[in-house]
Length: 404
Ligand SMILES: Cc1cc2nc3c(=O)[nH]c(=O)nc-3n(C[C@H](O)[C@H](O)[C@H](O)COP(=O)(O)OP(=O)(O)OC[C@H]3O[C@@H](n4cnc5c(N)ncnc54)[C@H](O)[C@@H]3O)c2cc1C
Image 1 (cartoon, rainbow, N blue to C red):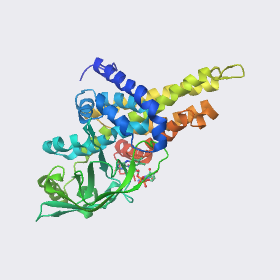
Image 2: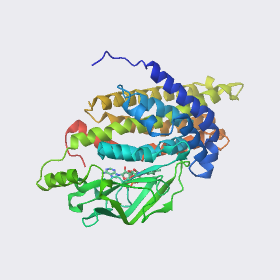
Image 3: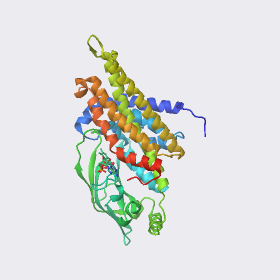
Image 4: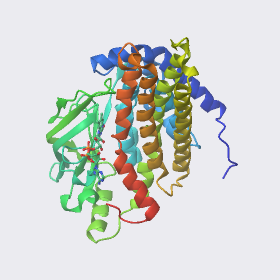
């Protein structure tokens, strides 16, 4: 293990500046418009792809090419500092790519992940479809069914997915389905639904409180037939796994926890980007806004709010960096990834609310971005595991008990 250091490398400092500049020059000026339009910001995706910020190569570089694990949270904090809705429009395909990477053979990885992004001239999207109307936090309740048709070597998928980022407008949908419902989550498998497959359609498109530049919709699977090679990991591996589970052998839950924990710092870093945006904006505002003959920051009650915001954001970031580093070394012990996500989500909601307070009426109207950041922040208590699910994971990890 190397000596302890929080110093970022030259490459990481460059990455941070590069993403920040894009967020400041391209994303920020467009944020209010796409929040109002509630549509995928295609022109921004195109610009991101042109500079190399939207694409599988970028994801591979920040995820795989970095031994410290810090490049991903550093890049995402800057991107989401620009705007969380547009940030998610850029990063949403990464959910599908991560779903593929978690289960695919190397051949499948190279076939499908690039198709989640396309090229700068021909942008594609990916969607990761796990949640269902009756299976949100309780993923084991997934009802979407996958049945193998031996005669044609095809899988037939039926079910309805909900709240899916890029759902129905993506080219690649990664679908989690149950192969053996009685085995609950241990009977699940993931499938790639290739572009243009018959039977997959978009259901309701949702209108959201925040992150409105990111498309969220239902995905309906009606007798969707995909070739056998679309089962991630392959049939042999699935059959072996199911046979082990049927014999009552324990699943590899430690490995699963490491995988889930590893994605949480990335989401937490997004929340920190939103919190920092609100903090910086309200700090500046407090220095400029004069009431009772002096800038409002010269009142301790305002200055102390900002002091608390700075402290909480830094504390959350430290937890995210620790979690990212531990995740990279596969050294999670007490669900540090969940701790980071829990803390960062709460800090984002709290800090954006405090920023509104500092701006007063200006914080409540759309002339300033703070009300939007407050709307955006709330999602971090909800998706990728709610606040309570993070608490559940942490309490089980620290106690070693089955807390319900
Ligand atoms: C904008 C957006 C984008 C999303 N994108 C995707 C996506 O791309 N792909 C995807 O698959 N899903 C996606 N989701 C779904 C998201 O992951 C779920 O909303 C989330 O997991 C929570 O599930 P739920 O909404 O059904 O809430 P529920 O599970 O119904 O929870 C409701 C409340 O009950 C609490 N609760 C539930 N179980 C327990 C328990 N055991 N103990 C204590 N409290 C509990 C929860 O914390 C919450 O407060 C997205 C959601 C949103 C809103």
